Image (cartoon, rainbow, N blue to C red; front, side, top):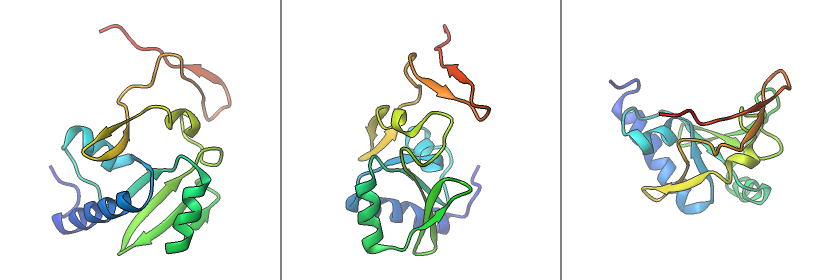
Length: 137
């Protein structure tokens, strides 16, 4: 089942590949899932930067817009929306600085591992600490 037409997802995929050659990032969101499952492609691109210096590089080529409400930066490359998340600014269920340590390579892209380590502590939207534990299978 495809949510988006082939033309828009192909353009998004090509943009992601070009971006991967220019800067260091972790693919998250729809393309991050696709790189593990090959099930559903994505129309937009979500990336997690590992440092602020990479954002400086992006600013040389594009004009990122800061989205204070969603705590991310946004750029458009060839009509493709790219959402950029950054440690110590972006708010995610698992803090970005923890996510940057949970990566592996898939098809030449840095992606998140499917499961967080058992010692990862996160803060929920209510500010309460949560402990992620692996369940027995």
